[in-house]
Each structure stands twice: as structure tokens, then as C-alpha cells.
Image (cartoon, rainbow, N blue to C red; front, side):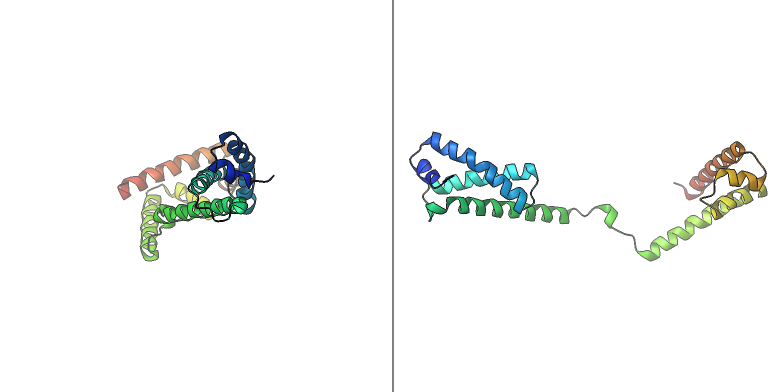
Length: 181
């Protein structure tokens, strides 16, 4: 389709012809943004619309130097508007560094880990010796199946499962109390 008539239609205020040409051009602009610029559908729609409005203003003011290259001009406007939008998004995302990317200094984390381990060890020592051995087995074999643990301690599977969860709860309560959390 020949879009060079778009300049004439806009300058002559031929709204019907201008709208017809713009509606035919819009899918082409969106396809350009999606294919060549890897824009999302909604970004392509927004940028195409904004670029058409900017271009129409330039054409009506007579600032378009080569009316026969109107499509190239509008495509360049689309590309530039899209790149400006992406640059702005990058700048905003850099300003908002997520907490998950901020790390405590290694020494501080190491000290905290040691303190947590010390508190857990203290809580573990508060249990009866039989329960200490039971929980130590779980710490040493975290992937062990309850069936294997039950056989190791000569108890039923249900008893092993129940004992584990009760002791974990007891250790957790002790740890919470001691760490004042």
C-alpha cells in the first residue's frame, strides 16, 4: 500500500482518507515492534499509537522533510519511542534494587549462623538422651525415610513420624524462646 498519500490527506484535512491509511499502517507498525524490537503486544500497541500521534503532529506542522518516506519516518519514531521506554524502565529497575539482592557481609552471616547453631545445640541438650540421639540421627540423615528411622530405633513408622514432629516443635519453641524472636 502506498502511504505517501497520508501526508497529503493530513495536510488537506481529509480525515476519512487519513484514518483509512492510519488503520492500515497500525498493524505494520505493531508487527515491526514485535518482530524487530521484541516488544510485547501491549507495548507494541502503546508505542505504535504514541508514534502515530507524534508523526501526525509533525506532518500537520509541515516538519516532515521527505513526505515520500513517511513510513520510514514513522518506523524510526516507533523504534526511538520504544528504546526510550526501555531505557526508562531499566533506569527505574536499577533505582529499586530488590532486597533479595542485598547480602549481609559474610562475617556477620557467619557469626549469626554460629549463634543459631549454638542455640540449637543448647536446646538439643535439654532433651532426654534418647530423644537427643533420635534428633541427631535426623540431623545426620536429613533425607532418611521414616521407615528406615523407625527400624533404626525399633519403633513403628507412625511413632517415628510423630516423635520427629513433636521434637522439632519442642526444639523450635526452645530456640524461639532463647533467641527472643
